[in-house]
Each structure stands twice: as C-alpha cells, then as structure tokens.
Amino acid sequence: MTTLNPIIASLTSPLEALARIIGSRVPTPGDFGSSISGLGFFRREHPSPPSVCMVEPSIILVAQGEKQLWVGGQGYLYDTSRFLVTSLDLPANSEVLAASPEKPCLGLTFKLDLRMLAELAQSDLPPTRERSVGKGVGIGSVTSVMLASFERLLALLDEPEAIPVLAPLIQREIHYRLLKSDQAGRLRQITSVDGQGYRIAKAIDWLKLNYASALRVDELAARVQMSTPTFHHHFRQLTAMSPLQYQKWLRLNEARRLMLNEHQDVSSAAFKVGYESPSQFSREYSRLFGVAPKRDISMLRG
Image (tube, rainbow, N blue to C red; front, side):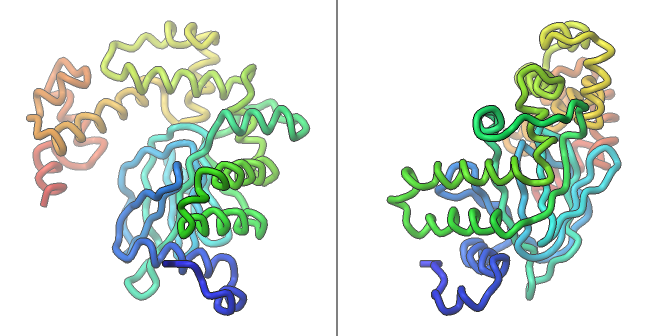
C-alpha cells in the first residue's frame, strides 16, 4: 500500500506528497502506466541529453527534478512550479536537466481528452476571445488546486474498486482546472470546431494513419477545409514543422520501431514506411537520430 500516513501527509507539501507516491510506485528508472486510463509515471536518476519522442496531447507534471522539451529548436523548461501542456501530437526532443539516484526526477503524464475539453469549454465556461492559433505546446503555472486534484486521482490507485466510479469525476475536474489555467487559450483553440487548430489536429490524425502514402499537401488541406497557404502556415505554427517534415518524422520513427522490435532489415523497413530509396532513407534517418540505422539499432539493443 502507498497511501501516506495522515500525520506525514500533513507535514509535507502537495508536491512532496506526489513525489512520495510516485517514487514508491516507480522504484526503478523508466516510464510506467497505471490502472487509471491515461495516467502514467516516470522516473529518471541521471541527467540525459535530448532524445527523440512523440508527445501526445497531455499535461506533464514534475513532482521532483527538472526537464526540458525541445520543439522546433525552442526549449520549454518545466519543473515543480511549471507544467508542460501539449494540445497536439508533437514530434519533440526530451531531456532531463536535474536528477540523481538520491533525488530522482519524478513526475506524471496525464493524457488529455479533447472531447471533454470541448464540452467543458462550450457548456461550463465562457468562450475565449482569443482568435490566433499559437503553438501546440506551452508552459503553465502549477496551482494548489491542480495539485490537489492530481493527489486525489493518485489516491485512487490504493482503492481500485473506486476507480471506475470516481476517476472520471476527478479527470473531468483536472480538465476543468486546465481550462481555468494560464494555458486555457491554447487548449480552447484546438477544441473549437470552427478554429484552425482543430482542423490541423484532424490533419495530423490523417497523417498518423496514412504516413506511408504519398502526400499531396493541397489535397490534405482540402480534406480539412483550408486553403493550401493557410493550412501550411498554421501547421508549421502549431508543430514547428511543415506537413512533409511531419510525415517524414512519422516514417522514420515507425521504421526505427520495425527494425528494433520486429527485427526488419534497413531496406524492408524503409520500403514499408513509404521510402523508395534505401539510401535516401539512411541519409534522412542519420540526420534525425544522429547515427546510421544499423548502428542506431545495435546501440539501442545494447
């Protein structure tokens, strides 16, 4: 059992309480899921250089330590006072800035339900006046009410029979807190069905399913009811990539997975994700991951 003693809990801050709970549940470094849908934990015991990752629409909360996410060459630092929020599936690079075996970097990830955000924004909260589409990633200020809702959600892990009943209520509260935070405008732009951000999100959904197919940007723009110049502008503004670069990123990471997990050779993986030239694939792979495909996979397995 990981429930805190009431006396101990009263002597610790909400962040310290979260760090204790997470630390007890993830005693070794890594990323871990939980019995609550969309809730995960991470533990790092050493600083690490940026590594390639895909960040889903989510909030990432650090209970101890410090991390940084790089998107399009811009760094977003987050720690115990600042949370990271992403409103789209974003290719990025993640690094750990502060961690040690004695004081590991501990935190949680919470996937956002965009439908729930849209429902709350339309029914329970006044509409935002913001019209411009910002980037799909931002840094927000951690508040005591936000920490309290997460602490209640984690407490349910010790009461599994209550999770189906109470977790949805607390998850809804967390979404509400986000829509009351300093990142509300960013989230509302993505959930507004008549907004540009919502259409870009739909285009990304299509790309994730069709990354191996030839991409005609004008056809994808038409699919989400945008002109090609407007689509290209807002796509790059939100993701820090062009649509073609985004597709390339998806292809290369899927090829990496095929080689690592399914033991496919370089040429087979390249063809399967849509490349016609293995040599072009190897050049672009090396540019993204910093090393040739075969060597990269050997290092990962080692």
